[in-house]
Image (cartoon, rainbow over all chains, first blue to last red; front, side, top):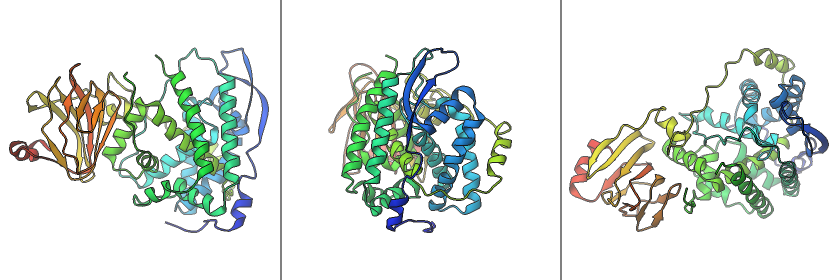
Amino acid sequence: MSLDGRLTTPDAFDAFQPEGSGSVNVVLRRRSKESRVTPAERSEQTQWLLAVRDQRDREAFGRLFDFFAPRLKAMLIRGGLRDGSAEDVVQDVMISVWNKASQFDPHRAEASAWIYRIARNRQIDLYRRKPLPEPELLQEPESSEPDAPQILAMEQEAAQLREALQKLRPEQIEALRHAYMDELPHSEISRITGLPLGTIKSRIRLGLDRLRRDLTDLRPQ
Amino acid sequence: MSKITHHIPEEMLCAYAAGTLPQPFAVVIAAHVSLCDACRAAVETEAALGGALLSGMVPATVSEDAKERLFAALDSAPLPPPQQRGSGIFPAPVMEALNGQPPRWKMLGGGIRQQILSANAEGSLRLLYIPRGRAVPEHTHGGLELTLVLQGSFSDCEGWFGTGDVEVASDDVDHQPVAGDEGPCICLAATDAPLRFRAMIPRLLQPLFRI
């Protein structure tokens, strides 16, 4: 595994999250068949992904590419891929984003989380003998309306998570990147889960409670 | 479904998300997450953190024609095969392991049936059918055993396990799961080593049945 590109200096902190964290107030139209408009505050990336999902909007897809492709490539290179292979995997991931957009649910994830999971699974499958088995997709009932307050709460949680990340020390961010972006030998997992990440953990706990509620609401009784 | 009370331990969920678990365990975890909102939330929350880290990466330089090539490939790229869907008591990852077919049970004696889904150096994955009130022969195993209840329930020295619950048994547990009275119990069980039964005859049969 390549250690190039690891950021251990304070610059890593300064460079963390300079863009893309801003939320904008937008008016959102969910699936063309619905005429209802729902005002919601959401990240630009999530807005683009919804435009891809609902309108197959190529311009929005181009914006997603402009934002995520260089970051995905950076993630894959730090995970040990060479430049050319990293770029091939970025292409695969972006094609999956286009093809699987209908599975994106803004009640449960931001665009960055959803795209991260696709990229991470792709990265994992490169060194697994068999593809990582994935949980069954949750099927949202066709008739369900977007729940604006829930989406807003989700976005706010994610924004708070990013803020909490920005307050970490560079070596803590580095440890997280290692856990979330590198190929890990099995023996390292317990060491990483034992990290003292109080703020992050409490953020995750909050997020967890909310997600758990959302998921219970989503599941047909 | 009964309320799920036995979940996947956090380190194991983390190892699953990082892709480091042997395949049989990963299938059990994907199956449990399919049934368990709490563990799904845990996995999805991990992705939220991963997403925040991804957004914060210092961008790498992407070659100039990459976007153009992507758009050119967009319409010609083959669509991903549709994900296997769950069927009856079997969530999608189990149907995937069954290749979309209903189980083909083999009799083990005492009304107990099993189907081996995989058995190799990574460990074994199998479905077990235990008639109401029956016990699986007492056994230990060389490593870790994960057992997910898909139908009914069982009890052993570690407690009561209802539908959706997972038992994580280490190699020092000598356990004898007994199916509940409500009906047959069907479980998905994974080990990272072959099971060793204590009673003589099952041990002799073990190579035959690979349990």
